[in-house]
Length: 153
Image (cartoon, rainbow, N blue to C red; front, side, top):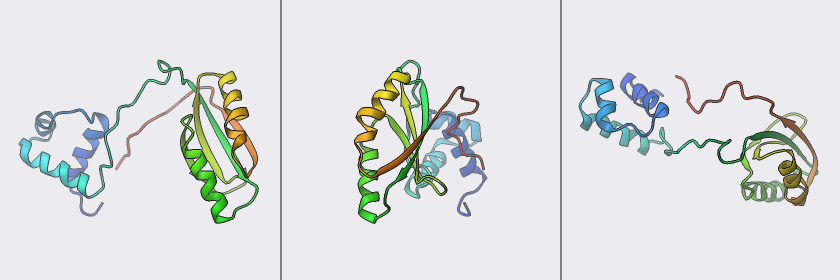
């Protein structure tokens, strides 16, 4: 962050809140002209501070309102076995996040499905077909208290 000044941070803050904001509107909020704001955004993209722009979708409208966190323990931890597990996990669209964790389990998966029956189908027909899974533990979200995609600084 040492290469970022307050204007850069304000640009990042505004883009996190609305990545669709026009350069003109963003410049007005920052009391600058459009050209330096555009150049700063391009530099932030080039330097990797901005990785990509996305649309956040409504899970309920798309029938994916059930959130499940599934902890996974592998049977063995050989390098190729872990790599195969990761390859298989990445291919499953229900899994929207996967973290390699420390503790009793090796991985934490965030899974979105329609309902309990859909989750049971996912576990029985997809997750259980992945080799080297030794144990799983599912945690079902009853209510989402805070969800944000914004990083604070």
